[in-house]
Image (tube, rainbow, N blue to C red; front, side, top):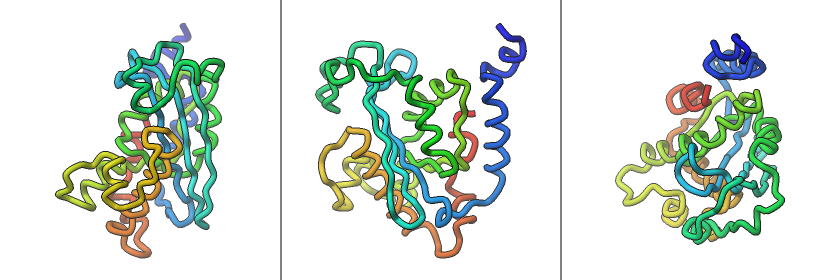
Length: 222
């Protein structure tokens, strides 16, 4: 094993330059109206990143002019998908047979989201699966920040019975079905983030909003 690799906390040497750049970007103000944002979501075989795998990855990049671009792929988790889990998201072993593995996909995902804040619902869960794969590939997220719509929704709309993405989409009347599929959940997450921004973000005060609500390093998985 390379001594430099082992001494630096298990990060591939190529990731350290990306980490340094991410840290520099995180210390600089950014403007959502200039960067847009990228909503991310995954579907998995279970709850544990240690014992379970990813079966679908999606991202929805919302551009400053309101247009959007999508990234979506099924993923071979290299393990059995329990029937109880298939009953939730509808993804079976037959559907992912022949699909790329997560290591083959994350490079395109990192590039797709580069330069934009990442927006996720319950960010530690998704990033708990994704970031170790990104690291194993010797890559690093090149995003200025992470926004967690679960925490933001609790702050913006206190007192609701449930803050699951499915229930929030129903409460705010933008539910179109297809929950627990990654791209559909990205669309719900993006809509929820817009609602949160409308509630918490004062016009012309992006810097203050980002400083208070973004998580530039802790959730970057560095």
